[in-house]
Image 1 (cartoon, helix red, strand yellow):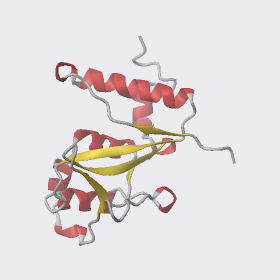
Image 2 (cartoon, rainbow, N blue to C red):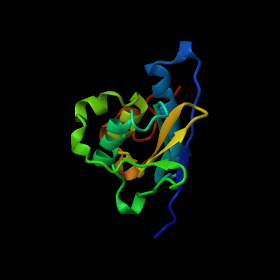
Image 3 (tube, one colour):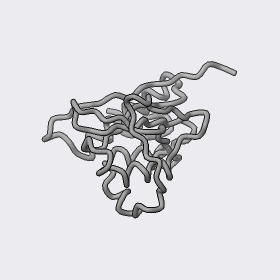
Image 4 (cartoon, one colour):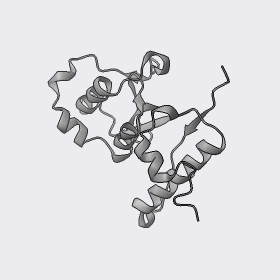
Length: 157
C-alpha cells in the first residue's frame, strides 16, 4: 500500500471588506488544486466554536459527537489535561438548534464529508473551543468536486 499524504489546514485571515462567498471559493479552489497537485489523501485541522464555556457549548459539542464522530481509523482524542468531553446523552439537545449555532466553516466541513475528533479544546487566547476536523479526500462529496472541477480549473485565472 502506498504511503498516504496528509495536509494540515491552518487558520487564514482575510480583511473584513474582502470576506465573502467569492473569497471563500478562491480559498477552497486553491486548497483543492493543492490536494490534486500533491495527491493529498486527508486534510485535517481545527474548527472553532465561539466561546470558552463548555457548558454553554454542550449542545453543539454533543451534536458533533453524536452526528459526525470519526471512525476508529481516523479517531483522535484531545489530551485529557487539555480537552473537554461531553459524556451526557446527546438526545437531550435539540439537533436543529445545535446545528444552527455551528459556525459556517464547521458546517461546511461536515457537508464536505468531514469527521470530528473526540473531545474539544478550549483556547482562551482566541476565545474559542476547538474541535479536530479530519476530512479524507475519498469522503469529499462529489458535488463539491464538480463545483471546483475534477482538475481544479473552474475558478482558475
